[in-house]
Amino acid sequence: MTTIGALSAALRARKVSSVELTREALSRVKSAQRTLNAFITIDEQGALDAARAADAALARGDGGALTGIPIAHKDVLMTAGLRTTCASRMLERFVAPYDAHVVARLREAGTVLVGKTNMDEFAMGSSNENSFFGPACNPWNPACVPGGSSGGSAAAVAARLLPGSTGTDTGGSIRQPAALSGVSGLKPTYGVCSRYGLVAFASSLDTPGAFAQDAEGCALLLDAMAGHDDRDSTSLDRPREDYARELRAPSRAKPLAGLRVGLPREYSGEGVAAEVAAAVDAALTQLRALGATTVAVDLPRVKHSVPVYYVIAPAEASSNLSRFDGVRYGHRAERYADLADMYCRTRAEGFGAEVKRRILVGTYVLSHGYYDAYYLKAQQVRRLIAQDFARALAQCDVIVGPTTPTAAFAIGANADDPVQMYLNDIFTIAANLTGMPAMSIPCGFTSDALPIGLQIQGNYFDEARLLNVAHRYQQATDWHLRVPPGFEA
Amino acid sequence: MSFSLDDVARLARLARIDIDADAANDVRAKLDAIFALIDALQAIDTAGIEPMAHAQNVTLPLREDIVTEGDERARYQQQAPAVAAGLYLVPRVIE
Image (cartoon, rainbow over all chains, first blue to last red; front, side):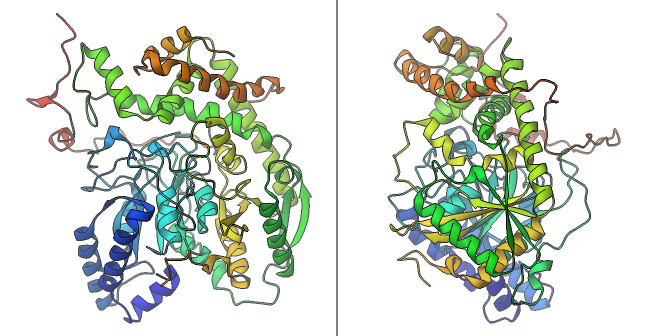
């Protein structure tokens, strides 16, 4: 499976049909399932029906850029008639009665839905190990995690099972797995993509976004996904954008001339693996060669991102997940004494350990007498972090650094240490707290042949610029074209 | 912040999640570790800083007060663990 752009051109030139592509995708998805466990549900019949409809549209000459492209959705996005589990026992048999807005948009754009990808339960995790359906694995080394929470979506694109997929990003859940699996992943500005039909984790942070091999693929997916939706009260009503517009400008010797790249002092040094730091340095050299200038910036409060996040996200989660009570949908315990006992047993059985932990943390910080000390305090520090970014982005156009402090770690390595796991998201969380867009693209490999990710952050609504920086970098490098051994062709 | 087993039991009750005695100690230890991380916030001076609840500084939109949804009860109740006569069944709460 090559890139979305190349497949789109081949489909419209009728060099390949969507049915052929979809059969190929289904075959790759199924044969990789034993090694990668990237999927929770595969919809063979639905995919082939959609592919036939796409081919008919292409034959009539009314196909768009995504018509006939096979994709997968993270299993936290509702798909009408197709099981949506959130990788939880709680929703093991839940069939969504309607499509998420972004799912509907991508259907209307002609994409072919092949299945639903594995993830950390209710999107809580950074390794995909917190899945009721078992961990997804990293195609570069199946003994390692693919990152999380959108681990299956990242692994599927990395292993070239599909050219693109969706994810959601609450604290790094698109960018961190993109980095660890070696693909491009974009978290747009909060409010650009509707959260309608995205099973809520932390409502003020949850952001739908996309994975693809390259920046162009992310741009094409975002083109379809973005747009106002009055069923999400935080969805922004903005003029339609063409996110790939800057990518089509002809290549020049210095395509990034004039671009000011901010380098936060806080993103280097302690905790960043030497090989990650070296790959980021090499990427900065490349960006300078493309015409960009670099400037040091300060984000003095960004170090507080992790504690702020681990107050705000669990607080919102404990509220959002109170709906899972065994009454209207989802798991219900078989034995119980009374109504309260039914709730307690249902939730004890239905949720995994990390989800329960976060509900307990959230319950505590919102409980009587502690609200000011925790939730309000965290919201105030959230403001200070946003002020740091506003100041830094007055001195530069984009902020660049490592997406994660290390490359992928072994499955099980952090399993009993939640705090160590949380620190994986130290560079990604701030973009969720501020709501600004950010993406991760491949920028090298460790000596163990594991991918390294480069994070590019920008100001509100600067997706087109981020995508262009990534695209120009990808025109000059081939990290994003590397394929994990055993998954070629 | 250091949690006791009583704190864990109180939180479990508030969150409506059964935690058995075997698991409570592990939950307590992990909550201690998480709050050691979170409690670093207390040292930050936030006097006069307006809390930031949301990424965008926008007011919630209002819409016309009209019915926009049809009757979806039967469809939605297909997902329910127990229903009868269009009602969700739960254990008896009034004797």
